[in-house]
Image 1 (cartoon, rainbow, N blue to C red):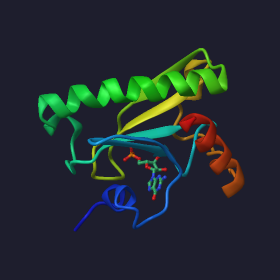
Image 2 (cartoon, rainbow, N blue to C red):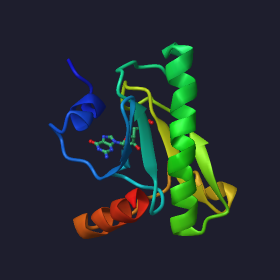
Image 3 (cartoon, helix red, strand yellow):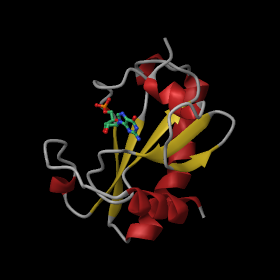
Length: 128
Ligand code: 5GP
């Protein structure tokens, strides 16, 4: 069965798209730690990131770099953290999270509650 992220890539499940090319798709995390929290996924469905072939894995980081530049520009954060967990969704993905301190990357923290309009506006700014 296709992963939830494959369904998002296929447009079967809606998402707030930030960027896309032939091999990768970036969209806002629905439970964001911060405004601009984005997920980058390969279109090729592989569960564990280090099971990706070398070309897909390295290309994913180059794709993520462009998205991270946008996040930094939009949020004015100090840095964009790159986090890989992958315990919830079995489709390799990178979390890009704008941070100003180490505590900004605490997945146990309460997530932001954003309205659909706020998500759409953030995605619009990041995809400009
Ligand atoms: P992980 O697998 O890295 O532990 O967590 C998966 C991440 O994907 C979580 O941060 C969760 O909020 C996000 N996520 C799970 N399902 C969806 C979804 O349907 N849409 C979006 N945009 N994000 C999702």
